[in-house]
Length: 191
Image 1 (cartoon, rainbow, N blue to C red):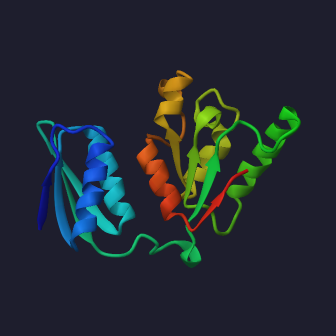
Image 2: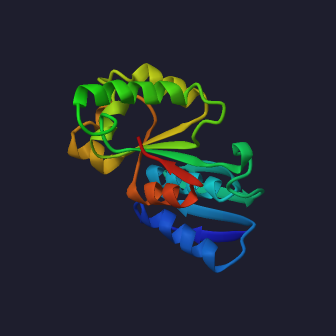
């Protein structure tokens, strides 16, 4: 088993160093040690995206993330697809904002009904308002999430709009994970 000690490093550094480490050698089993809960979760998700089954053990603020390579990152995706939905605003299309909001509601409602749903939805800029507790889209997005679609929202964007404490669905992410999502997607859908 390979070992990587990343204590004292804050996100996104542990994810980047883990990625760089894995790119330099073939690693079937790895243990990564961090002392930041956000880094622990981000490293765990990164390993899972690379086909590792993972476990996390915490003791006295030290997190040990173990990963065991078992399958590729696209295994289990319907028909080999990994669609990413990228939402960077509160409405769909250009022209009428009112019409754009009607279209966005229809777009999101349709996602939950698809036979092959997206793998992940990324919300950035004013699009993060859709994942907050004040949003009129909460029930739709919760239904989508319950159907297995991962929802992530840009932490910098939530901070900018002072909405970090109002996230109602999905989880807070960072630009490294967002860019990694684009790289891992087989196609990107932008309403």
